[in-house]
Length: 428
Ligand SMILES: *Cc1c(COP(=O)(O)O)cnc(C)c1O
Image 1 (cartoon, helix red, strand yellow):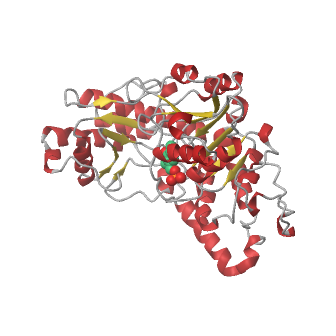
Image 2: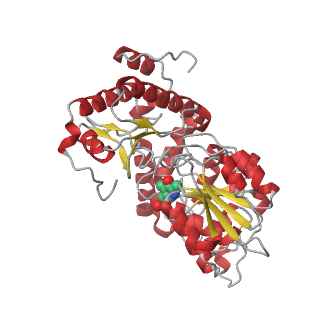
Image 3: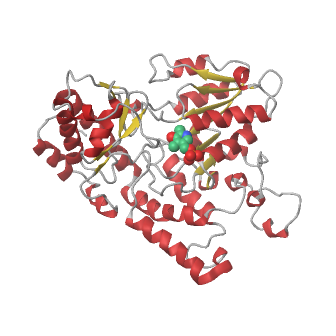
């Protein structure tokens, strides 16, 4: 980053690739021929290691049958705990504070069911108006289950510009009636990073429990959840962590809460040595494992084994540095090449506030995305006017960023996008 001085030439893109210490990791992935994949923040690409780890676990079923729970290199019984332990460094947690289990949405249900304990005047849940709908639906249904009306008991902090949520506005909304706060670490549209450390301190000063959804930050930016005192977090492993469609997600609970009975219990919440006593009184695990419910989805967890190896080798710091440089470079190219074409950057510009993707806004965004796809570039569209472009440090190149902006320029200059309807597809 120190040596970066913007230059719009193709040679400069090639030079950035040459100086890239992570360049070799691209070979670890199945990069699609003739495509520029910029959608790794929706679904990361398959790596060869993940393919191998999936096949290995399939084979352990073939070889061991029921004994696969305890036998083989990746015995299934405590695989969730072991993978949680390995994942912990990506979020700055202790190994025992993390478990690989469930999905973002089911884990969020579990966390709210566990930590939302309305008492006295503290009865409401605070969220933001830009969060992913699934998180909001989960909060609404948990409120209803506790007998409250989401219209009065869910407070959503508004955005001043439709892109960013100001931390000051969130803190102002931390009133005496708030029991629990659920926020994203990185906003899925604008890519804004919320200051988790500051928000956690402010919440705790007011006796409020706070948790974050890390879907758009895990594997992309560093976290220090444990040191910051964050109460809980949930995430999926199929975005930057490249563990496959619907792969098993994860959750984190700060160790100060260990012993808290899971709101939604099941036999996998049990202390492992007690589980097969088959008692009707649960003895919960003494760590994050307590927030599991049923039998782990082993085959959907398997790709994470290979994927984590790659993160351990590449190092999150290197990944973040390259990602920041790629998004910086992309923004510079956009400003230089796409002037006066109706684009605006909807993501924060500052490094400290910018997640892993660039959010490009345009009135014709839906059909520009379709034209990009026809030209081999895979972005994703976020209604009504957003184009998300995620250059992923582990497998995208600076040359691809350069090409993408050239293609965008051509689509606009030749008005190629006008061949398409300005309407989103079913899956966008
Ligand atoms: C991707 C994403 C989800 C998806 O939740 P699943 O339960 O994995 O389907 C939820 N929240 C946010 C913020 C996301 O980005």
